[in-house]
Image (cartoon, rainbow, N blue to C red; front, side, top):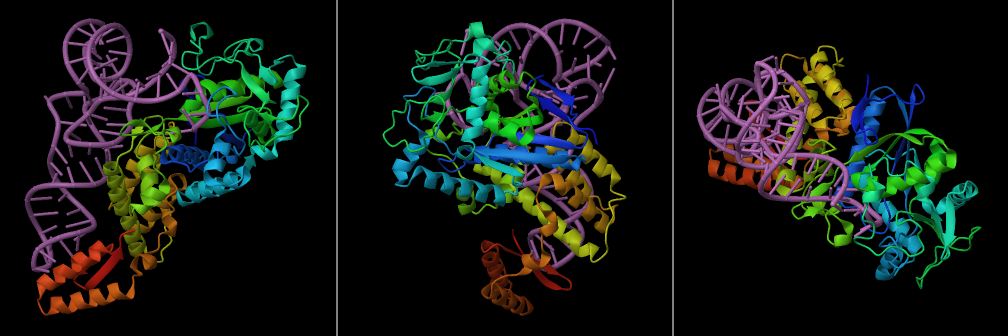
Length: 468
RNA sequence: GGCGCCGUACCCAAGUGGUAAGGGAGAGGUCUGCAAAACCUUUAUGCACCGGUUCGAAUCCGGUCGGCGCCUCCA
């Protein structure tokens, strides 16, 4: 299966050809673990997961590497902002290391529930300080750095193609329009590789370096760690669209300045999730978490389905109404799958006969991950009565390799496992129906429904199903 | 000021030159004690607006109006 992916560098959808024939190196910018991930963050990881699954579905092996930024970042682009890790530490009365561990665990708890596959390598910034120092030293040797005011800076003037990814026109940039420019910078777009001056009273994350005791700049970790695990050149680097202008632009500069060759071949960026007021942002203070959605009665798969309903390069506005629609669809889909399983019985289905739908699915998956169209193909398949149920089921499970709903794990028995009291109510309703006391029967049906149990009366008796 | 994106039915959302996917919600029908589920039927001569290019445009070009994101940490 040929894959076509949008590449931010070329600004077009191009045929994807990996460096090696059968293995794809994929680097994803991971979380900064000073707070919970919000659902906007999680949308990005769902996109990356879809990308990874699609690459695997297309027949490639994938090496998926993700960083965890557990070293403090400042709240702005100078060294007089507040370190977010320290801020969080102070507010929660825990050490920065405990904060990092707590939110890292929380992050993976969320991604697990969303069926986001864990990266093959998860690398923590604090465990790779030596690699970062080595990279900075390499840049220093090649004359790309200077020291001023105690900090080591990257000089963008030494990297002629600076800003290519973001199509920045350096002359037109009004740097400092919104913030004051660091007086030590030779060029306003220069950025810090290593800090030695800490103004924070509780800065405990400090390491020795050739430039003094301090801590790394914000961009160097991704360069150092991606090259360590994927090589000096690799296939895909992905992240949120906000990273294009600064983070990834700077990563490219420092990486390619150090190695003298192209670093990343494909840049894939996902668009933002918006809320009613606009972009969802951690710094606004209030934001939606997966836990909150769950507390409102949603299943993590509802959110996954919601995200898959829109293209990853489109802004998507989150509303609870839209999430409810996604939940309805997802439930309907899951119950159809369970129904197919029942009909299929023990017969092992082959996907032959579902070729039309699988072709459609593959075509849209390969065209820059058009998940809305893929979902459309899944629905077409599932509803196609001309195809044998076992075959439909097998084909749906094949598509699910990309969707990640884990349809195969849907368990009819589990759907029918209900508490004893509910069981009693069902029995009582049966008796009421026999006695033609329909008002009581309807009343019980309403109670059951309120408890997430759906009743279905058939000629052969009453069956029930948990709304999952 | 620079860069980029969007405006498609009641809602969400694909489609980017060949005559509007899919889902949700609603309506009618079969079934049912009534429902639910399932199935069938149904809901945009039109894709913000105005021009232009073309045999043909939601799709390309120009303009207008409206909305959003990035350029500070941020997915």
